Image 1 (cartoon, one colour):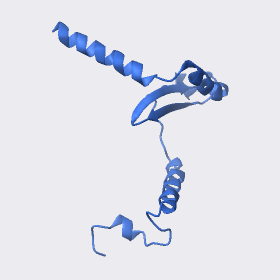
Image 2 (cartoon, helix red, strand yellow):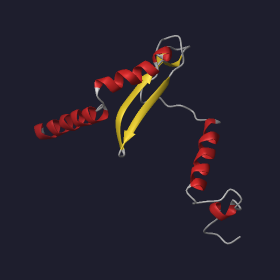
Image 3 (spheres, one colour):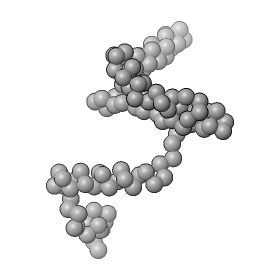
Image 4 (cartoon, helix red, strand yellow):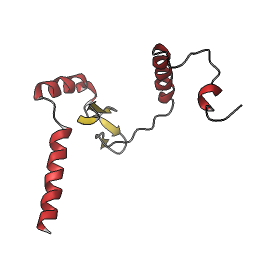
Length: 117
């Protein structure tokens, strides 16, 4: 039983160390970019930096909800809404640049690639 507790604690420590493995000088630079939004009177954001499929930095800035005084954290859930349209367009343009699709192609070529139309 003691070994199980030790394993859990060791795992949590390893996760917390790997999740924040940027040098202090870099985290200060990141914080300086978001300083104007990191207060209780402003909506903010949450950021995550991923390197080689591992989260190396995560932090929330400012408020998630001004009315209820809820701060942003790395776990804050944001509703994407119309923002996803810009990300989808950007992704499609990247695929075109890489030659993986053509903007003039019929969309059914990609959406229904397994079904005869």
